[in-house]
Each structure stands twice: as structure tokens, then as C-alpha cells.
Length: 454
Image 1: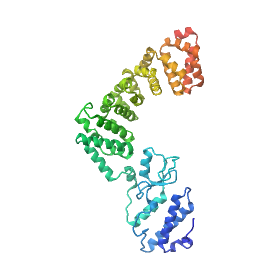
Image 2: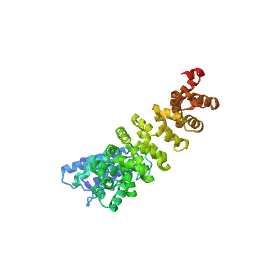
Image 3: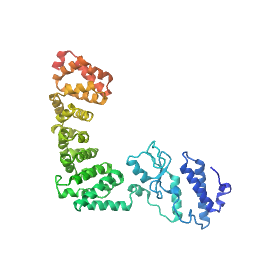
Image 4: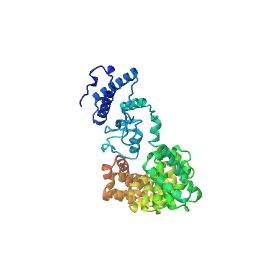
């Protein structure tokens, strides 16, 4: 980089502010554009800032960078094209305004907007130097820089965005045409922009306003397209962690999601189940949803519903059954029979075996599995599958069944004699599968009369 010679003398004695500002722009550009950290440029920038400060203190000189007072390009966010309030550096070395780059990262983007390089990590490092330079420039331009924390919390939303959000919620109280238009736009906005999801937590009555159409009609009477958009919007806003408790504790939400699982379009049923799964991330919500009776419609949908909705339904049942109380409810509501039927039909075997293994801690479920002849089916899966997790879940369930019903030991002995299924798993399975398989082998290796009398 060519040096201008501005600092060949005492920086405090330099009187040419124009040269200082030009040199400052060069240094900032060098710091921002170069891949490596240019320590020399940083040192020179600090000296320039010091010199400008000294000049300001000594004489009433204008420090505008140009006659128009335009924001220097180095101070603008490459995304918003506006003056940065909270500049941060990403892994590629580029600097962005925090709320705008955070919006992209929260939406799942992992590419630098400027360089198009894939980010090696998503850590954001404050660019203190640029921040100080922006503050200095704003002070001398008579510009008040907005509060950094508040701006970041807004996620880059403008007042116009917020006003539009409120107007969409008001439309939910209008006629069907207005409701459909607003619901469709809210669905799209909450899908694309995490900041719009967060708004539902900031406006106390946002969720009730969103669901106003359901207060006028029952779920069976509401327009199918409107129902689909509203249920999908509930799913979108439930993704935001701060909204999970707010949404689930609204007294109309869980019943609406249950009705949607029972009678919505395929997409509505699928998204309603996905919303229940998302909300169940909180243990308090698991209890609330379980007590509301949501497991029964989910199990019924798993049994007779459309194959395209089954995966989301299974995920919802899995999420809810992570607590003991809901396992008991699921078994009571017929989950074991339905899950075994689907496994035999080879539908979503991975997910359903995981749920069945969870339910095997409930004695009534284990007894029902034995009565429904689950043992041959599970042994067949162990022999045929290459999935270590499926093998593990099968042997966990078999262990529970056999130690609950001694009549099943003959089937296990015959299996081992013919195929060596259990001993192979004891050698090659996961650590948990090995423990369960060895537990079964230990029992099988006892004298037959001891097995029958144990």
C-alpha cells in the first residue's frame, strides 16, 4: 500500500483536515477489504483519529467528509445499505450490521452475502474500530446513533414493518376476503423472517387477534384455506423459543391444533402435528398438551391418516412421550397396537421403533407388545436392517418383553440357535444394544429348567 506521507511530521501539528480525512478513508478501506488483519493500518487509523481530535479541540474546523454529508460506504451495512449501528465481523472477515446479518443466520443462511463464501462458523465479533469511527463521524455530523441493544432486539424491523404487522392483525377481524389475504401474508412473513415471529411475543394480544376467525365459527365451518394458513402461522411462530410458552398457554391453541389434526387438509394436519411437536420442546408444554387430550387424535391420525402426515404425527407423539405421564396416556389411547401395525407395514419404521422403545418402560405396554406377537417382527428387523439404532431399539424392546413374559424365551432360544441373531448383536451392536443382548444371552445360557422356573 502506498503511503501518503501525512504522518511524517508530528500528527498533532498537522493542519490539513482534508488530507487527514482522505487518509482515514484509505485506512478504513484497507482494514475492511484485506483478508488478514492489517495491524499497521489499524495503528495509522488510530493516529489519524487522534490528529482529527486534536484539530477539533484547537480550531473550529468542519470535519464533514464531503460537502453533502453522505454516509461513507465503509460505514454502511452491505445488506441494509444504511449506516451501521452495531457493526460485527463474520468468519469471512466482512463487516455487517448485527440485526441484519442475524436475520439471515436465523433463517438458516450460511453464506456471506458479500463474498458468497460458506461461513466456517456463525460467531459474530464486534468491530470496535469501525464502531468508534462511526460514532466519531456521527458526532461531528450532528447525528444521534440509535441505541444498539434496542436496534438489535428489533431484528432490523422498521416502524413501517411494525405498523404493517398491526394492520394485518386488524384485518383478521374483517370479512373473509380480508382475513384470507392477511392470513396468507402472515404465513409467508413468519416463514421467511424470524423477526416477524418475535413480534407475536411483543404484542400481548397478537395471538388472539390471529385466531379471531375461529371465535366466529367452528373449525369444521371455517374456510379450509384460511384454516391452513392460520395453523401454519401458529407453527411458524412456535419455532421462536420465546413464543412456545405464550402460544401453548393460550386456551384456544391446543384445541384448535387437535381439531386441525382430526379434520384439516393433509397439509393442515401435518403442520398442526408439527406445531404440537415444536411446542412440546418445553416440559411444561408437554404436560399441558398431554392433559388436553392431544395424544388421542395424533394416534388416530397415525392409524388412519394420510401417509404424508404420518412423519409429523410420529414426531409429535415422540416429543410428548418424553415424559412418563404422557407415556401412560399414549398406552391407554392405543398407541402400542397402532405403532406395531405401522411397523409391520414398514411405514416410518425408524421413528416408530424409537417411540415403541420409549413405551417399553411402561409395564402395560410391554404386556400388550407380547400379546400382539411383537417378538417375531422385532427379531426379523434385527436380522434384516443395517441401521444400528433400529437394532438397538428392537433389542431394548425384546429385553423388556422377555423379562416380563417367560413364555417368550423359547422364541428367543430358537432364534439364537437358527440365526445367532442375539450373539451377533452382542458383538457388533451399539453399547446399549450389547448390554441388552448380553443380558438376554446370559439368561438363555442358563439351564432350560431354570429359565422356565425363574
